[in-house]
Image (cartoon, rainbow, N blue to C red; front, side):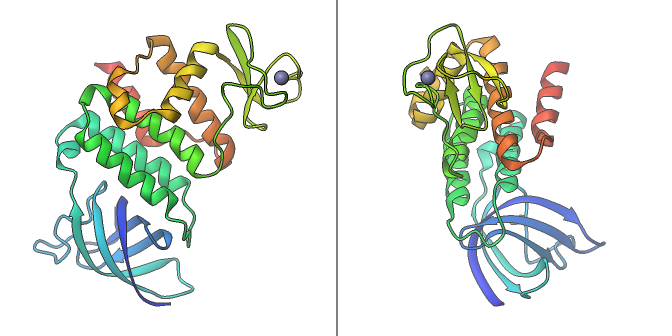
Length: 256
Ligand SMILES: [Zn+2]
């Protein structure tokens, strides 16, 4: 309770009244925080453009202790990510990142893990090429699994440690890794994934931002990689709802 100051990434805003906004933040010090920004919808509001989603800000807010929604006192822009906001595809990818990260950040999470990952991933996307935008998103999702303690074992069997053989391998979500013929996948929750897609997922986990342009991913693999990572993330978050912004982005692309 009391005055708190922290860096934060704006993930979502909602209109609360004619003049106020409800703003969701992934903060560096306190995990997921919701604040009411009074007067933010008025022209010449003191908050200016600081409360647009996908913006890194320095905030001061009043924490009321028991209530879910805190009161924002000030917000100063640290990074606007103008290259991202200048392009619909890049902005869609960044919106997916913050939406997924929000879902995997707890209130009062003091580890700053997801905050740091989101800022690093937005920095990389901001300076990256538009044609690598999807790779940035998949790499972010793989790294989110690692950050939240669910880094999967993809190149060796979870049970015996041997390299699985065959063109497709069973990926057990409940074990957090692939299983070779030593273990029956019966009664285990997971899916079969092609060996090629598993290699791509491993590369995404290990890749630096500068490796992304050279990482080649086949058309069929793109779909399988995205589906597999999303299902594994959903398994751990306990929600089967796909990220809204991702569904919207894919729908838009299929219509072009
Ligand atoms: Zn095995």
